[in-house]
Image 1 (cartoon, rainbow, N blue to C red):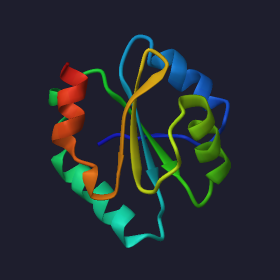
Image 2 (spheres, rainbow, N blue to C red; image 1 turned 90 degrees about the vertical axis):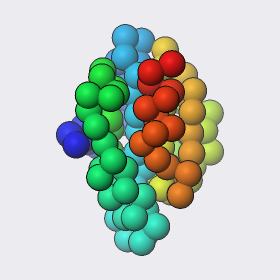
Image 3 (cartoon, rainbow, N blue to C red; image 1 turned 180 degrees about the vertical axis):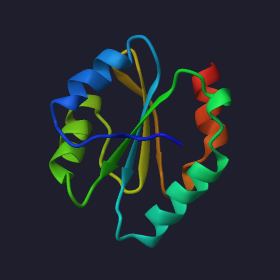
Image 4 (cartoon, one colour; image 1 turned 45 degrees about the vertical axis):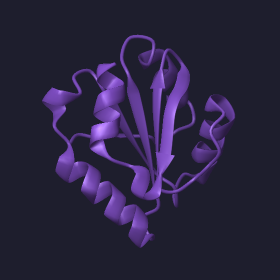
Length: 113
């Protein structure tokens, strides 16, 4: 799986712009949390790029970039959780889930709809 790192608040403008032409997913990850590690590894093991064509996945390290997570909550109206997946289409959050709710099949179904 190829992640696009989210390391600058200005990148959120690009996320919104990208979401106008393709779905965008943000994975908010706490590198010190066992549940977050389990969630990301489970997602990466299930990931099949051919089943989510055009989906652009972003990875946010919450311990290094907490201020970006706060800005995501503000821009997309999604309360902060960790781990968390947010799916964005047309500049708006259309789906978010956290912890063990994170799974590839749900993401795939939303991207294909």
